[in-house]
Image 1 (cartoon, rainbow, N blue to C red):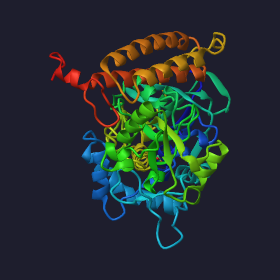
Image 2 (image 1 turned 90 degrees about the vertical axis):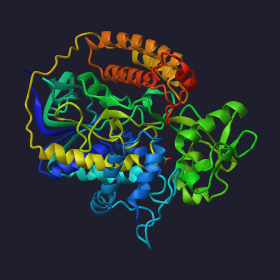
Image 3 (image 1 turned 180 degrees about the vertical axis):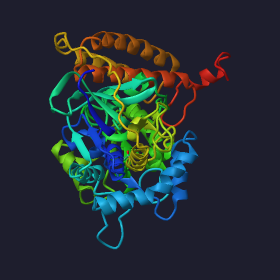
Image 4 (image 1 turned 30 degrees about the vertical axis):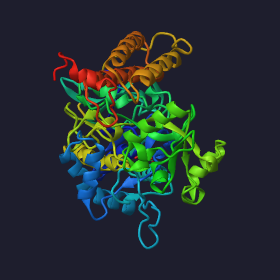
Length: 511
Ligand code: SIN
């Protein structure tokens, strides 16, 4: 067998969920290796998270009701119970007591809880509109100083290693022992492997995720045989800056009173939903798209609030990008969050033994068909802690097995290969697997994606470049999303079938 490294717990990814898993496992005394593609904190979606972290305040039941309502009948009430029951302790223990995050209002009379769409009360803890940044940086510093944790940056997991249905570790493209690039993959064997690889923003042309969000954890788990669920529920955020290079304009801005206007200057949301701008995200996203189509443009009118005073970071971003926010910020929907993913239980365990998944790459059942604002950091924190603790307390030791053989003998990829294929993939996802879906479009998407995956697989057999694996992962997840969307004829939350009536009426549709 080739050289290999071992660890008690291998965490793949370094956002809030991965950090929480690493912390919880280390607290149990486990040796933890965090392998992350990230080279800087800003490479993780957590660092980009604006709005904040939902809390239960005095009523876990009320947060539960809002989460279930946003999930449009598809969320699992039992797992939402876990979220709301753990929320207060997790926030207090990790964010307040351990990391000392200075949430707005925290040094005064009481926290300055923000209001966001589809929340029945103001309950969001935040730091300006840059909450993730203020959580992740101290979290990484804490782990950097922890004697049981080692963070290996710029290290992608290429594949999971399995042995008779057990996940025994992962192949990295950087050797943890030497720190050098590993052309043919460096095996790391672990008692447990925790995937925390984030979202799928790179599958779409416009996304609020950082580059490199290629669905790696979902793809690797699926290729290893793990169950993946609910991946048709891809959430589009309604208010991203309307540009090829979008930035998120937090829902908190609408929570403070900003309104949406079409190109005729009309405020349109009251016609779409009784909660107007604070309607569920999928409703607002489709309304914004419809008004853009009908009138040419939608702007977020921030004149009802003191925008620069309340959201200084966003005002600065607008100024840096040459956006005159006083004239209203041009906005359009944009891929934001994958509600489904690797199916896990309340401890983050996947369907394959010794494999866990947490954060955006996991499907806990909390989000159902549509995620409630500011619950992603909370879910990542709660499930990260649960999975890390369970992984470590199971006390399993690394059991080296024969890793798959990767080949890296052929020349580099043809220049532009990955870029060209990614462009094709994104065109298909945008056009056929976006805000609106139909059976025929989803069939078309699967055809193109299958061909694309075939072309990529041919290269994967002889090369191990990270670009190629990311492309493979994106193609695998794109296919999973398109297939799940095609197999689900019913609109719910962010999965909107334009042909729902036709599907329901079709004699052979199974209804
Ligand atoms: C936002 O700030 O609007 C995004 C928060 C979230 O996605 O939960």
